[in-house]
Image (cartoon, rainbow over all chains, first blue to last red; front, top):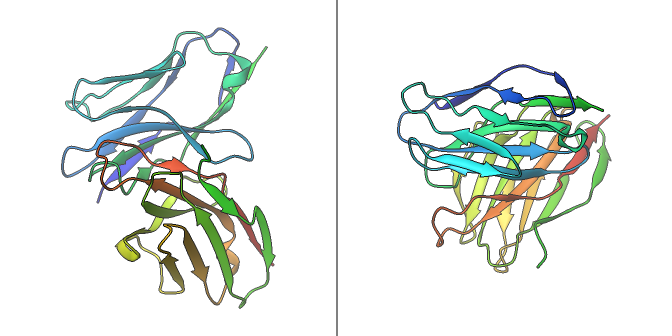
Length: 112
Length: 114
């Protein structure tokens, strides 16, 4: 079945450092890919998405490119802030935007 | 424009009891999905409702059941609660008609089983 694998955390960075969180996926078809963010005590917020190969999703300084050849969707940000501290989930959906399959999440901790 | 709302926020039950969680979808959405998020894990898909019918189901036992009402709101019922049912239960809504729109999540219900 479909699956998503994320790098284990926590990822600990200083403010203004470069961020990469790796995500790879296994799917039978051509899924849509997502990054969601979860702040403490809250639900999931969509951060960015990409629906086909070579698409780049971007939002709030975060970017991720849909790489079909490496089945990857790595999350990057050039300069992190303390307010970016949260848990980040990579996810896919085979059938448009319906059932989501999530990775286990990566906790990001940014210190001043 | 209200987003996805869930109630209650927190709930404490004992083993063997039954629980009902509630969800109101974002305005304009007609599809509701439920997810279980155990501590330190990613959300796991339980099932999805559209037009008052269960359309998809994940790998969860029959103790987990649901309902969707004509106003698109939904309930998740869990019978014979086990300690392992302790988790954050997330509701997500979307539109079946409008394609390429992502799911919107509520803040969840934290269920603790004693």
